[in-house]
Image 1 (cartoon, rainbow, N blue to C red):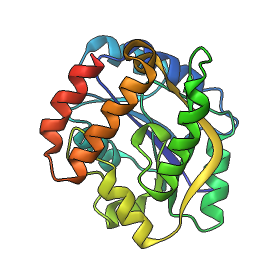
Image 2 (tube, rainbow, N blue to C red):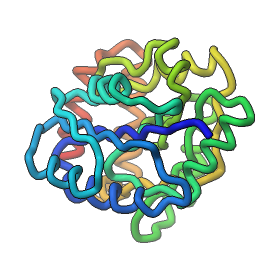
Image 3 (cartoon, rainbow, N blue to C red):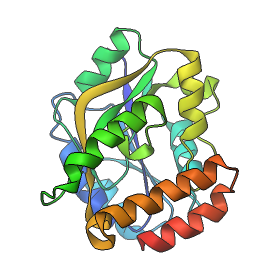
Length: 228
């Protein structure tokens, strides 16, 4: 079986990182290593990583650079990138391995909101699935990739936002990029706080501006001001 490294970028996500690391210890197949790349360089996050036997690395606050740094120190044949505020299914790694055995060079999981049920979820989750299939699945969907393919296409862009877009495009040009049926649950607190449709519209406007050539650095300032 190929070895697998999990890479988690974080910034002031102590509670979320602790919960995710605890859950990862319960998977049916365990990763060979877990790497947390902390943009705050906080000793509390370092202590959490030590508690759960995860590597802790300090980085500047830029998600694309954090992901690249994690990939560079990872030793696994397969790299699995997770956001701190996600929850994964028990058989996630087994599903990744099965996809790799069938020839996939990478892929992503099915986006599901994690939080109290709300009727907009019934519309937004299928819409996100369509956007991911014909557009770009984003980093909160648990992108995984063979290490050799990752570096062959240049890895994540060193941007604070939309860093996975050139990576996914390169992987799809290189080989089979597999959408998995397994769910990954993404914290819905920002949608609940800002309003489901307001938050969705803001995200789509950022994506449109990116497509039209706006700088990821400029867009990130707007995005993170909304997310704070």
